[in-house]
Amino acid sequence: MTAFVRLAVLASVALVAASAAGADAPSNDKRYVIIHADDAGMSHSVNRATIDAMERGIVSSASIMVPCPWFKEFARYAKAHPEKDYGVHLTLNSEWDVYRWGPVAGREQVPSLVDDEGYLWDNVAEVAAHADAQQVAVELRAQVQRALDFGVPLTHLDTHMGALVSRPDLIEVYVKTGIEFNLPVFFLRNIPEEVPNEATRARGLQLVKALDDHKLPVLDHMTQIYDHGSFEEKKAAYLKAIAESKPGVQCLIIHCGYDDAELQGITSSSKLRDTDRRVFMDPQFIEAVRKTGVEIVTWKQVRQMNDKRLAEQ
Image (cartoon, rainbow, N blue to C red; front, side, top):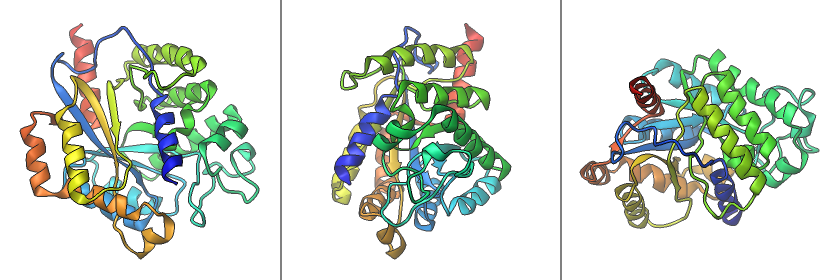
């Protein structure tokens, strides 16, 4: 599973695009970090951990997997706490062995998105091989609308496991969904050399301009450390990643959970997720982050900064 997740991380980096425009932050040398918890709604354990890390830690944002069975629990929390920051973790994969989910739009409407058992495809490669782009648009719209119908105050959209950046036409659907709902999408300005797909690069260039034209912010950097390690090792790695942030806005992606029987029954990453939660709730770590001079922000604040920058031009 670890190797597969790493491939997904690389795929998620493919949602970047080069641009000649400057950073969205109002100052060229100011450093901002969104500490972003993925996979809210996946399980009760993940929900508890994400909420705890937002309330008693320094997680500043979270995104919700709408198709998952525990979506309603987290949606209820989000509706009751509109001051916090929430996105939809647009989901086209159901990657665990026995704990799985299907599309929100209904299998009959999006048959290309499900496997023989009626679940969303297991991995990104299967999505890329089978998904019809028009049906993807139907499903993404259904996921965002369901979150809104449950009262979730949305600030952004992002993509689970990078499935939406596996093909140029899916990237286009992803960005157009954000524009349709007037929500920023997780998109970066600079594309790394590790992503060789020229079609992705070309389409990304066009799409970042579309986001700029619609006055939706585009981030500058991302970091994800999806590796097992001791509490102290992960603490040091995350602190280094934050302290060495470059000017602009960085999204630091983490995964929170409790290493309990429920999460152990779902995924082999239960310890990893528990460690992430513990690190970002650790008082010593929080104090060390504050001393770096990096400002921890939400997607909501990033959009406000972008609006301010545009108004001053």
